[in-house]
Length: 483
Ligand code: PLP
Image (tube, rainbow, N blue to C red):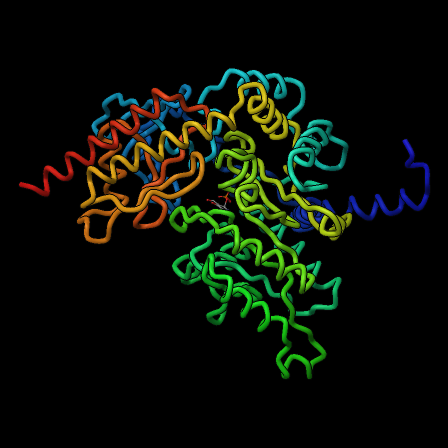
């Protein structure tokens, strides 16, 4: 190795210390805060003997959930125990065995479905060999995954983390540093109304939906520096860029400079109601970024990794981002996130600027590499396109049959939604519950859209079955209307 070079060695040591501050600090604090004379039996924790965990399948799961899990989610009253392909199995609220066709895939995540033999084998073997070492060392699986991502996108470098929010958090930091490197003290990131970028403080602030901000502000403000514009509206975007590139006098007087550091958008708004981006809008965004030396940052967490029939959502828009993020389908359900950057944007963050303990570990990267190989070996993108067309045609037929309930069909590939009409008398959530009773799992995208995001391996027969089950729920609902 070349680490004999003294300068490099000093730099590396400084980098490792910075990267691991989080680890070193608590350990140190623990050591100094423990009075050495206290015997272990005096400590509160040691008065109890350790309670071993219980067998999950011997517990009453819903009851244990309510008693022990923070209530941050509304859950459907079913318990899923196992799955195979596009099927999930479990128990309903009457404790009856149930089987579902899964058109949720863990919210657009389990690209290869459940119990995929290639993924199972790859993970098991990786687990036996090595699952985590930290980013203190070179990780061959991480290098291979980064290379695959760069070979198959506009990116030139990758950073790995564990989730979509964390990938977006990295992208927001990169954009702010980009602004800072170009003399901007008050970097603005423009995002869209009805966007969704995650639940960490910065990503939820980037999210243009006030309902997610409620009660999380400081003096009424979320993380500063985000401005929201209507999605797919070129004029509004242009106006906002011009306005934010002007520094108000009170900031100028303090020696500060405001400017747009990035425009951050989903290529297709997922949680906001399955709204595909317009190519003209994204091309305008690209132009505006080029003119003002800002970064075009795309959130591909839901749309990316094959779900739209192309590997990345931006391929549907004929635009090249400077930075994009991925998670969800990337690991086929094993947690992994990635922030990808190209050109000068890939050189913005240096050693110690950003880190993640689990990021890019051998286990997570092996999962993503297996998903990637499965895509190539099985022409998955072709399947997504064909099944996506089948889904669209089937939904449009249902719209024609049930016009009192269903409105527009939207989306790309296997990221599709059907609008539930305002005056239909039911919500997307209610239709999802109806379909669940018929044996089909779906998920709302906002209050008015039912989303269809099956595993990318879904077969033509399974697609027909799903459409039939969805129709059954519509028939029953309209039958009730006519009573
Ligand atoms: N970005 C988009 C577009 C998403 O759809 C989501 C999750 O739904 C996220 C970010 C957040 O991802 P995660 O839940 O993995 O943090």
